[in-house]
Length: 247
Ligand SMILES: CC(=O)[C@@H](O)[C@H](O)COP(=O)(O)O
Ligand SMILES: NCC(=O)COP(=O)(O)O
Image 1 (cartoon, rainbow, N blue to C red):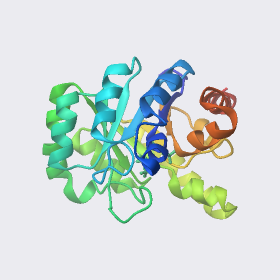
Image 2 (image 1 turned 135 degrees about the vertical axis):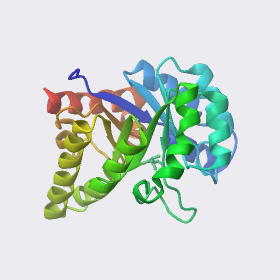
Image 3 (image 1 turned 90 degrees about the horizontal axis):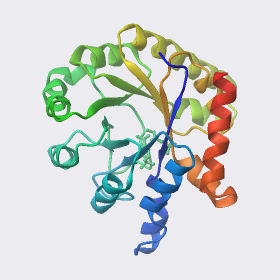
Image 4 (image 1 turned 135 degrees about the horizontal axis):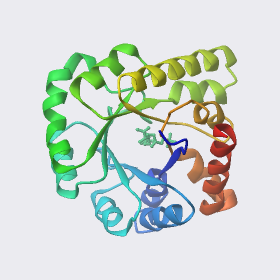
């Protein structure tokens, strides 16, 4: 496996700012194009059921504008399945959603609904989209992902990132251990491993250093940092932090 760690830039929160006023600015498609020019290896966009940030037209625009792969995050619903099958993005990442949550709180429950999920993901595989499951770093979930034939998992780094931000160092270390162990185990089971949620310039290093992890998806922090540095430089600095850790 190549040592090159891919960076997927999540542009959801450009749309959050746009939607704060309605209208068209700032444009998430323009952000995605700048991100790919700045070295993003892929773009991630999460079409939430409530359309609180990305909206359907953004997915149309991304599919037309991008030359790098689109990782389309969505809930495992019939509506979202139809949208994804219409677009056939490079990757479909299944994410659990709660209307009342501020952000994605947990990982997808795969172990308790593996038969239903196996049926649900088959049309994506048939359409040529890679299926990724956004799960907690939990053995039962990793095993279930492998069992249903998903080629990719993305481990939820939120608890690790939150512990880092709040300087709860013991918890940070135990969350990092879980991600480390489950990333290794998933690779033994033949899964490609991605990690994402809440990562920053500070917290990305230990995750980027994990052997064999193929991709990190990072959004909220980069978009926030872009206010101060500009989007291209904010991405370049994240790339640098990842490369230093992986070297
Ligand atoms: C699944 C995931 O981690 C990202 O999509 C993240 O959730 C960004 O979207 P929200 O901030 O709306 O949760
Ligand atoms: N799947 C995680 C992602 O796309 C980015 O999450 P965040 O950095 O916006 O928290």
